[in-house]
Image (cartoon, rainbow, N blue to C red; front, side, top):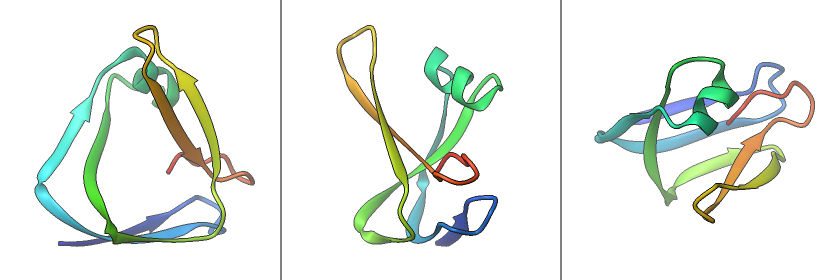
Length: 81
């Protein structure tokens, strides 16, 4: 299925080809803190099927496990991408 979206101010947008079978939710404490909710919905897409327009800012956080996680967001409005 084709999905599209972007940030609140419109500076960044994306299009992707996604498989609905690869959708899920995450309820780790990082996702709860970033979203202000009990969980975050997500869908995995391939790099080849993903197109980003605009320049996102990247914040890399090291989890308690030692794993590094990149969080992308709009540098103007702060929308998480």
